[in-house]
Image (tube, rainbow, N blue to C red; front, side):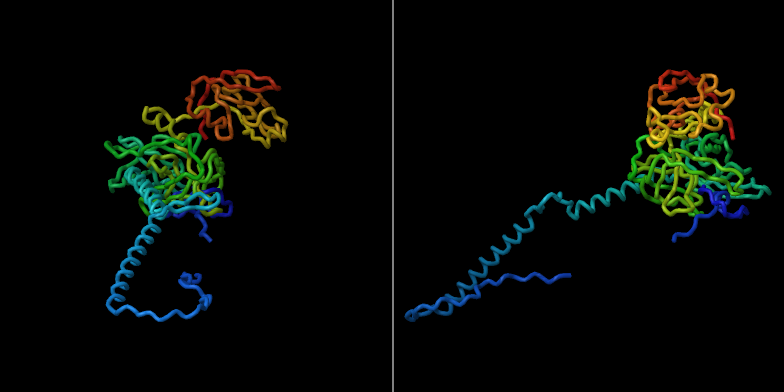
Length: 426
């Protein structure tokens, strides 16, 4: 998936990857002197003294012997001095910390490379190619995307936009085997889908967590971009909690994707649905979009967002998401200062300017008595923050669960019980 490009043609080439068809192609990227020994003698003239009486010199043999002995002693002393210089520890001056020597730097590089290689070895056998056919206005569209196996009995996680319009699915495993696939369910909240194939004993991707990710940590994207199977790209987690607006190829509909992982690991058409992996070889995200207007900016859905529907599929349940039924604006320090709000984080029910619909008719929020202007600051005692907004804290729950909201209304706090409903499709 790529972010919206309003100037792109809506014609679809059936040979292109599914992201190119739906979201458009990504644009092309635009010595010093040597050492000199100090003189071993003085340059000053010797002091002139009275001539000494002549003495009888030594014979030739004693002189040769003395020269040989002196040479041996000199060589030995030089060897000791050089040895001491080699063995002497490095020293630093000032406040600059001592830096690692060449061997340590090489060790770091080897460890980093080994971590990537080991991570790829763990996950690559679980990555699949998903080939689609059918769908589109004429029923003849086709495309290619990625996915990964998360259960040995043929359960695969991928992107919704990879499989949503397809009438036929062909799943190609890493070992070359091919299976017909079925779309088990589409996520009503995110760009995720579950595909099922009739197979057992399959390799499974280790599933990690996205809860403790930090910007700067290693990120590895694995998939099948541009028809190149099992392509590995590396980078870092560039940012967290990102929000983008993405639209389909006809430019007739769009969706907002929230709470995404931003990475500079290259994500290209065909990568969609493939795993984003950490250095331990654990899946931390599902690659979903590349920004067509910038190089080195890709996005992944956090794996913790996908876990509830992954489990629902394994339990044979319909894929559903919990729902309160309110429009809300995430509060940040800027909004709090602008509107003189009593808190810097939370969910302000309604729109920022107070206009428009705030609570859906017949929703759980209406039944619980929530109204425009209320501020939700906690769910079951857990505070809303910049990284944990209302939708994020609701996700682990299921429709039918009752949760406790802490709500501020006219500068007074109250506890409100809400029984979650099911997020409507579409």
